[in-house]
Image 1: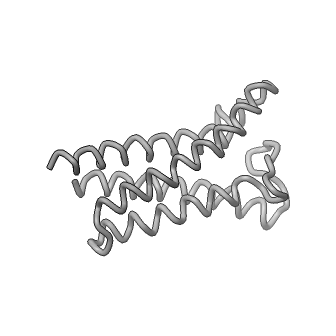
Image 2: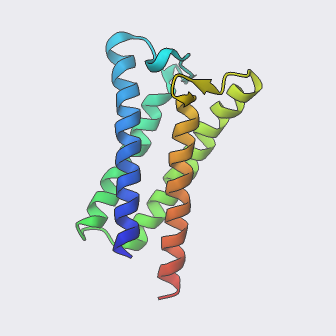
Length: 135
């Protein structure tokens, strides 16, 4: 079970670093990284919201790795936050697909990569939750 929590921690850390980089570039240069257009939500760049969601998962999962939070709560929190992330990033990816802007400097758009991280976290959380039920 702990191995799944470690995998979640690695995924949350990667998402945090990625969204943190995007957020820092935007915050300090007022431009988007990788020469992409920046999607905005409620007046702020989408990467700021992604950073906040990954930060929540990073801390909860990190505390789970340290044994301070029960695995059940780690899986539940990560599943809920990642489903919000899937809906959030997914809405931007759909817009990018409709406007034929899904590709970027890194191959896909940064929103598409964020969506991939959220889906990976969600699936891993569901696997962990289901294994808890069967123990």
